[in-house]
Length: 250
Image (cartoon, rainbow, N blue to C red; front, side, top):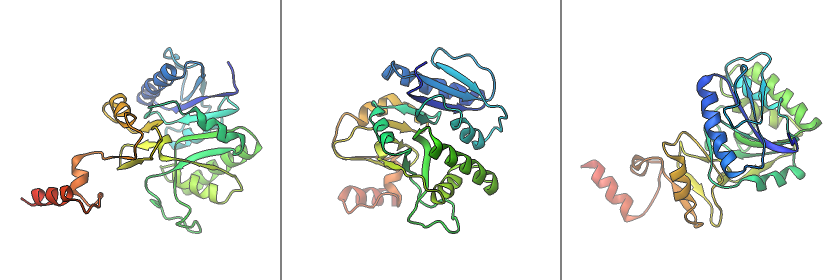
């Protein structure tokens, strides 16, 4: 297998494995020349999509597996995807960032979900569901630090420990735009002239959503439900908003 660049999933448990395989089929469909690896909790068949499967030596059944799994990537340049992702367009231009930075990652849609003493609010939480990293001493040291901080914090989510470990490290990184991690759990914005690359979230029909999002290159906003428009999540001075609010009161 060409280990220069590839996609990586980490999945513990049968349902996560099935979800990873489904996501990987889209990678295979869109990018047939890129290898796909899986790190998982036990020996599994390749589901007709994974080029290599590695087994965690001590699976824990929580986010610690994800951290350890990244440390087992067979690639020099790794594009990591959570199992609930869907490629809406070719995202591989992001590999170019690894020529200069050992890490590329996007902001989380929530900035300060876990207050961390000593970490500035202006250094927000980052979303570890989609990220790229380059193998080397810098990344290895950070990954080990992240694992240690995760154990010390003893919180189920992995992003607070990632945020702290990154703040305390000297690791340089690039910030991906929202198009590389389009979160469907909250209102999300796609910028002018950009196609959405990765949809992250368990949308009922990600393929249809991808087509709708990329049918235009104008600036556009995704709203999870119409209820979002009626709530305080959308601030607008338009007549439609006021009309909908009046209709809601009725």
